[in-house]
Amino acid sequence: MSNEQTYTENQIRQRLGRDLPHWRYEDGWIQRHFRTRDWKSTLMVVNTVGHLSEAAFHHPDLSVSYASVDIKLMTHSARGVTDKDFTLANKIEQVIQWQPGLEDGGSKGTSGEPVNAYIEYD
Image (cartoon, rainbow, N blue to C red; front, side):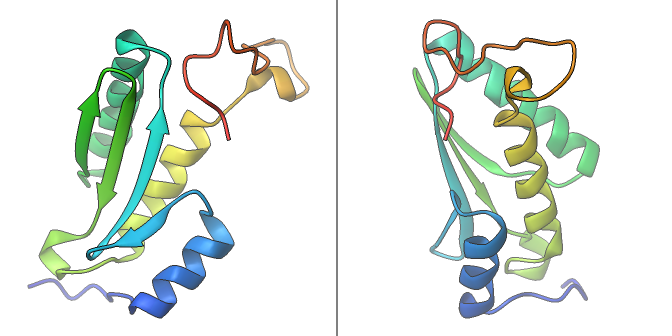
């Protein structure tokens, strides 16, 4: 068993509402659903989440279909939601939802145009 602090359901819901409003708490997991454009886009999301998860050495459960990815995070060793879960969820959210065309800088990105976007941005 881990020495990591787990959060209560109320603490989790408050933190999600404040920091990760597109995530939800259900059945002991923090979870997020991403709609993608097609299978190739789904694989791009899965590979991105895989890279971030491996870098963090913290691994979510994924459910993958043609045009969606569901992510579930819980710290198994602690038997609950810990800071590891919030940290990884935050990083996943930042990277997957990044739209360079909406920022100052050299990259135009997809600018959220549906014809070019690989996911449905929030």
